[in-house]
Every structure is written in structure tokens, then in C-alpha cells.
Length: 157
Image (tube, rainbow, N blue to C red; front, side, top):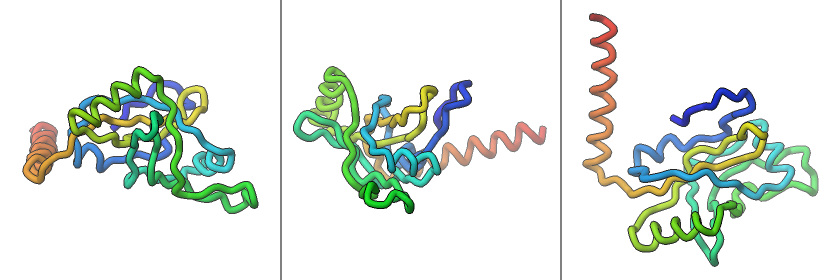
């Protein structure tokens, strides 16, 4: 789970809990996201999902694909498309590093958390990840169960 800073303005909008189960997260990076006004208003009500989304590098730009932000009912003609591609803002150096990781090392860019930072801006934390095999997932699950059991035993004794 993401650590929350002491700042009261920090608010998690959407979290991809499944990502840490399905992937080994090598590193993560905070990026900005280009949004319209109705999308920001919809995010303030917490109506979004990044569980099925991923990030991709196309034509020298980073994009969030298949991220869901619910349409605002009273936006009228100024509404937005719910699953449109959204541009992610990252420096050229970081983009080159991500492109190299995806191209050479076979990594995937997975969104982990979408949140409002301390300034009230929407940020997205993406992870550079490598997919887990079924046996790795079983080992992760067994380790998590063992840690829970260990905590119960320590609590009782």
C-alpha cells in the first residue's frame, strides 16, 4: 500500500491492488496526467478505476490506456469520454529510461496509484514491472498467509 504523507490534502483516488500480485515492481515513478475539467470534477467524487489500465510509449510520448474516469452527469456538452487515452507528463530523461526498460528488458508499465498530491494536482504513480509466473503468485500468496498466521501467534502469546 502507498505511504501517505502527513499532508491533509493527499487523497488516494484509485489504487491498482492487483498489480503487486501480478507483477514484480522493479521501480516506480510519479507522473502528471493531462485531464479536462469534467474529469477532475469526477475524480474529486472518487469515480475512477485503473485496475485494467496500462501505460504505453507511442511516438515519443507516454499514454495511459484504458483508464476509467466516470462521466459527470451534469457536465452537459463539456463532458468527456470515459475510457479515452490520457497523456502522461514525464521528463525526457525518464521517458528514455522507461522506453529502454520496456524495449530491451521486456518490462511493462503498470499504473499503481492515482491520487491528489499536496498541491491538489492529480498524479499517477506508475511501476516498471515484470510479469509473475503462476508459481511466483502461489509463493507470494503462501508468504502472505504465513505472515498473517505469524502475527496471530505473536498476538496470542
